[in-house]
Amino acid sequence: MIPIVSVGPANGGPGELDKCEFLQRELERLQFEEIERVDSRDERANGGVRPNLVAKLRKRDTPTLWIVAHIDTVPEGDISLWHHPPFAASFEDGKVYGRGTEDDGQGIVLGLLTAKKLIDQERTNLEGYGFGLVFLSDEENGSVHGAQHFFRARSFSKRDVFLVADAGSPDGSMIEVAEKTVLWLKLIVTGKQTHGSLPERGKNANRAGMKIALAIDELLHRKYDAADPLFVPPSSTFEPTKREPNVPNINTVPGSDVCYFDCRILPKYDPAAILADLNELLRIQSKMLGVEARIETVSGQQPAPVTSPDSPVIRKLSSLLTARRKIEPKPMGIGGGTDARTLRAMGYESVVWMTCDETAHSPDEYARLSNIISDSEIVMNLLE
Image 1 (tube, rainbow, N blue to C red):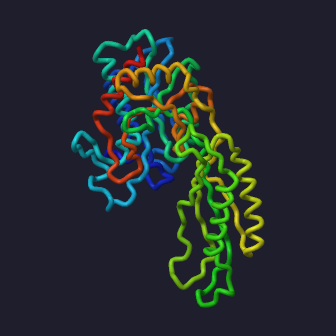
Image 2: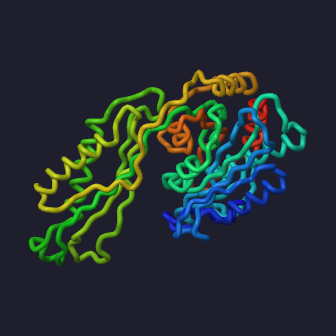
């Protein structure tokens, strides 16, 4: 699976179709009774679609435990930092290296391995839950073509439980029950381009953009500084990240400047209020610096509910981890986004959990095979 590139088109990749078709063949080989594709149209991607895949072992009326994982990955980044080829599965010391091995190949394989165990052990008619898999596209870029499209198009029972295998900790003690609100912003500053030796004839958008970005950074950290111990880190984060090229040569004063902010906001704050504050700041800064400045929302969300740590699935998962691994489970919130936020917003009971070394998006990303096997045993017990 790892050599099949499934980087989304927003990140310069082909999309997820080839990987989805590979996984669909695996599900057919495992003899799932129900397999369904729920595609979202996207002309930027191979085949013009962003595929989503759902499969269930047996047609039953009992509540179903669904393992949810995403099939898209981020790009490999700086190839010189890798010691293993990013789009090949390299096995070494019980680990498998490659882009997407942990994020979220580990979740995919956890679901497939558990299904194979249930079939091999003839345990597909358990008394507790039915078992199913959901493989989604577009998680790395906001889930518009993935979870948001999929869960609008296909309904599930409110008795079902969704285990999103897409984040965790090295010992498996972290049980994710909440996520910060993700807000990605694009700051566009327009000045006037001129020759580098005659700056007075122009308006340097680069300088103005830096000043405005720093003013945004200061405002957000000062005004939205609450802390919530449920989350790691406990406060909202506001990080200036990507910067677009302006002029290709040194001796030209740029007339435009574009940079981005990655904001992860505690659920207590309303993103609309933050945007209103920023627009007022831009009005003042634009007048003061003699440039035009505006904010665009690249990806925005509304705060999602928290899964109660007292929910039945979390109580059962916690007791299993305590009994089997002798660890103290910790219900927590995270700044990273998963498809659980869409599920929670739609009223479905969902929990994010797996055991991992947190190598997602890093060079030499890897997954430990022992973690996948051990987590599968825990999932098998959850089904009982």
